[in-house]
Length: 553
Image (cartoon, rainbow, N blue to C red; front, top):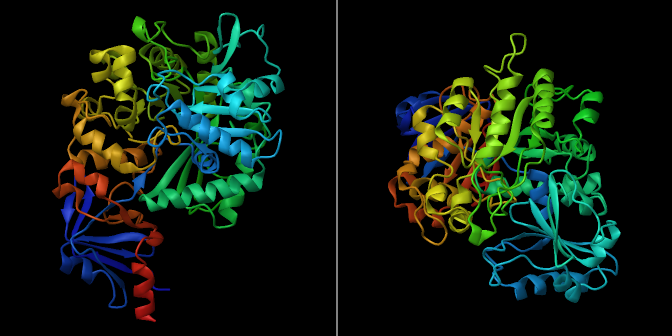
């Protein structure tokens, strides 16, 4: 098969520094020329496949620097409770009830995505409400943030939870008037999850495949799984190897192991998994085992992110939840740092960011410096100037989800007030100070669709139209840079991808319109028409490559 490709007929976004070009040439999976039509044409033979953009735009393929790919794939088979479709308690209960009617008696019902701040009742569903629609099935539904969930009575009974069960370290079991409400927060959620049946390797391979296909349809050629082992232990590691072996892995993957004490860090280490390309793999392997994930706190929407100053009293007050005390967190960070892992640590509130940042600083040592390690603070939503300066000095990267502002920004105002909400996820400040913020979605927490994410970066508007922190607006070029090059940088891959310059891997996305030439609102009518990984199409909405191949014989 001819591996040459020529793309022209529209603008090519080379990257933030390179700007735009007329045409791009690919050979053997790499960009060989980008520039004028003549320059690109001369770099390939007359037999090269030719893609006519017809006024569309080509960009470096998108990089999902922080998501949960296997978990996202599994949610495609769960009850969909996302706020785009579900805004009332009645609709939550209707969907759970319909799933229970289809299920066998005693079969678990799982749902994901509700947002109590968007529901008409303004609160979480209750166990007794879930009992009414699913009396013969254990039910566990998880809030969109993934840090809070509600179980029904049967689920709590199977988990061995009663009214006098104590809160675990770093977690909370909600009670009101001495009765369980069904709400479990942070590390308490594992009490329910441990009672649920584990996923099989085959189910996980299917989930990885389906999730990867969905990502390719949105323009992603690189992605991540940030909590490998959290759902099914070491079976998840095996599933990824099997998916790659079967050709069902679609993105270049940056794999991050679940490093909490209940995670798989020790098992993985004992089985020989080390930072870097998977053992026995070639240089073209799609799997790289890169980071270790530990949870520092929860979510601002769920009132469990840890802050110095309390949430508004009208929202419930309190300062959130630390998943671990300082000494336990710092010990884990030091151990994983010395093992050679990139530290990819969840921290959203400023107090949790301080705990994590100070732990990374303490891990610095002459024989194991943190300089150049590109440790990451995942989410990093609400931080102060001093923390930004220290991160920049040590090369510690923020990995934010601007789409949180789109989906949850108005709830941040409700929970934290206008000023603190407006300062969240300061994309422009980060970029202009010299940080490399890798925009991402945290899917299935938020939508994996990149276009609302881009929209928020260039407008700072929530899904209700509220503008929060207008000074943090990016240009479209900057927003795409954060979604491409910054993600590659966070994975030590900027030498191979993130721009469309000669020598780079030909990971390319062709969008249905030139987003750089239109108003931000046009993003909601934009699609990825084609996605290439290494010059080969992994998504082709209109069958353009197939048509070219047929024409060339």
